[in-house]
Length: 197
Length: 197
DNA sequence: GGCATGCCTTGATCCGCATCAACGCATGGG
DNA sequence: CCCATGCGTTGATGCGGATCAAGGCATGCC
Image (cartoon, rainbow over all chains, first blue to last red; front, side, top):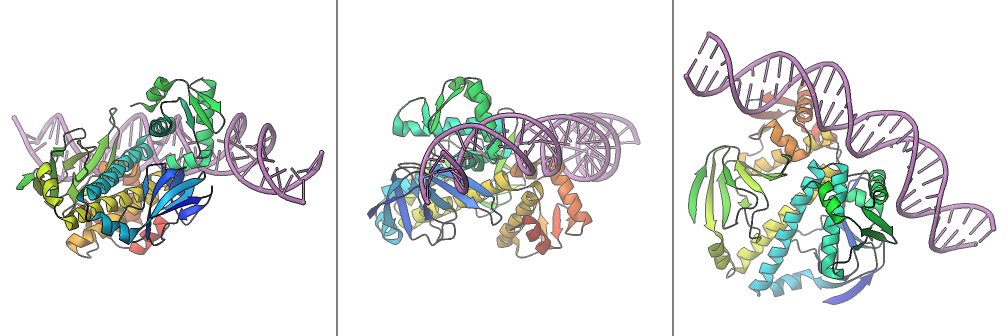
């Protein structure tokens, strides 16, 4: 086990790399994405403190992880970690719990990508991100957005223009307020409504 | 542990149900879907013999599973199963392997839903389904499609019309051949090409 | 300062797929 | 048989979001 830090825009691991390590994040945000050879990109999620990376048992990473901010994390040599953990059923159970919870999250995101309209997608993203950050920064209505507009677009299956226009409209309508490096949520109820359950 | 059978169009479990059981499929096909209150539906996957259902540790099912064909399966009382399995690290490890593999599948499907065009989506579906069935029915170029066109559409984030037109075009172009309850793949290389890697 | 670079915004236009509509065809029940 | 029902196909039209294009505004380097 070994502490480490990576700088913004640097890559922790890439899709196809041998998955010899496993990480837990202690500070910062990463984006997790799958890249197509022609440049199209799908961000499958963002990782924040408390999250695990590489807990899959596949021999290679299926996705790329890179830092949006400065990121601190603990790195474990995987073979050793698995060895250790297999002696502790509770730990193993916990790992499985985390993995299967991530599966549920992924399935919900499929609904967003497959069946929701642009505005619903952005509302879904903003509300989910906000709720997720509560564990870290409490219930503040100010939501930091360390990812750029293009990242949000690549997470939601939209273009940067559509994301930008949607947020701009909400600012005009006083649903959100533009603040440095994020937004402040003024009318969460309205956002829930736009989400359309 | 207990064998059981369910009839086509019948529901095994619904989203929100208490997840007291866990299943392994021995024959037949199910669709797994997430429903929005307004009727929109996302099919997150199809389950075939060998697959597990309900191995998540969430107390409730996040999705609905219903039978497309007659389905046979083994049902386990979950608490008992988990109790048993925690004494067997190898089993637990296997469960985790299955869950994390499903997560990888789900992430790949996000790319399809978020970043691929209609024709690529259908090609992706057809090829993946075909490869998956090889484990069951060998390498035959005849692909049974127990799911209807609407199900394919709801899996791919398209409409039934787009799926129907795409398959019809491929039939005209002799890429596939219409056979009862499925299609025969005549030109797999062309499909791979249409997938665009 | 001047200029380049990266990121975001805003407007105009376009197009891929959804929507709307009609029809075909099988199955089953009276 | 007739008719209803469910599912798939096919064509015509429309629209939501992509694409194309231009400009704004930081930041940083020379």
